[in-house]
Length: 605
Image (cartoon, rainbow, N blue to C red; front, side, top):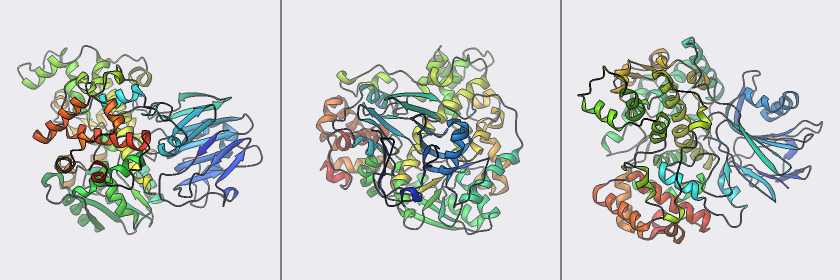
């Protein structure tokens, strides 16, 4: 018996086709398709009795081949396409989704995720009892009576801040990677990389209007009265708001978060400049208080994984406010990773490697000399070190692994180096940047920023709409020549003095935004975490009250050292946040404690 559990973690609108109205489960050829709760958001399902496959889609999809109206059922359309062309028909879809297909002729189940990853992560568990999969880790975990932790996964989490596919922290639960297709037949599962964005392809420049038309077409379809915009005041979200205000001819509503009294961390002033320039409504939500921290237990249960990016806290709080008035959120995620915005981080290692071999670079420059001395001879190792080691404040991965009890410590290796990049030899600076772009997108993007936004919205039953990623614009931007993404010579790039997101900034954003927004420095949605955590830890001494399982897994004496360093010097804030998130995950999923309805202080007092 195979079970497919389709739901979001908490609230939302339940909507299925007439075939399944009023039913919580349907059996087809001894396969049981389960609606685990009537709280499903943005789901679509279809089953035809004339030997067409059963299709279930979680998310919103569209296709270049056909324009589907709101009344159309995308799963019905896809079922017909798969009957004709096989599962390769999924490649015709645009959007953010997870898909399950049951071919009732071949008796094969296929599961697939979009090429972006993170927004609609699909978790699965295969055992003698069958296959269970869901976009909610929680619902799959509840199918396993004795959930155990994977030593490889916990080593990867502690060393890097991520657990990459196919692993999760649970030994018998896995997740599909971006653009992956897995098939299940006769109790066996096999997977393949199905499709990916064209970061590694050398393409010619395209007409600037092409990208703009992709975004505008998406907004015309999805920026309806049920949707509001997130407006940070940064280039990406501001461009979407400016375009919608000018081109759609309809009222645009926007939300921004305010960190009052937090100095440079509060960027709501830029959002107000954009709102005034575009003549739109802006709703400001106060987020600068540590009560936001108390939602962390519910967030960890909703997401199903410990989290490195602590901006999940204000994001979740902002989405809770939006849910009171809107059913969908339009966000400006994507360009930072599509356009290699974080290339400057890569300069610290991978381009430093190249600096060894370029004679004209001024070795007397302390910065360049430091890069030259610290860079690895192995180009793959530099990528591994860059994208698999967050800014914990530590210098070596070995120091991070010291946090683990030696019995659970594994030798971590970057799993993406050859499997994702292939065997191509990196020869030029442009090749380096393309690979940096590819790895950054599919590590920090898919399993950092995108996962944070997608799971926070899903937990609250909000549709998340991403014009840069859910439309053909993602493939357009990924395939642009590197000079269309970063403008400035090698030395300017090395010194972080070049123009980033050049194509978006020069060809689209300038049409809709004031110069003060175009030229402003990059910011971020960053709460005053250190202050919040210090207040919380001083009240509760949480690091002395970690669960029994966490104490067995972690080197508690070293954990105590990290926490005390944080309290004395405000060092290791991200690491402290992740360790608390990890302990909550252990309490919820391993020790089966009921934490989601309790505040953080209540759990650790």
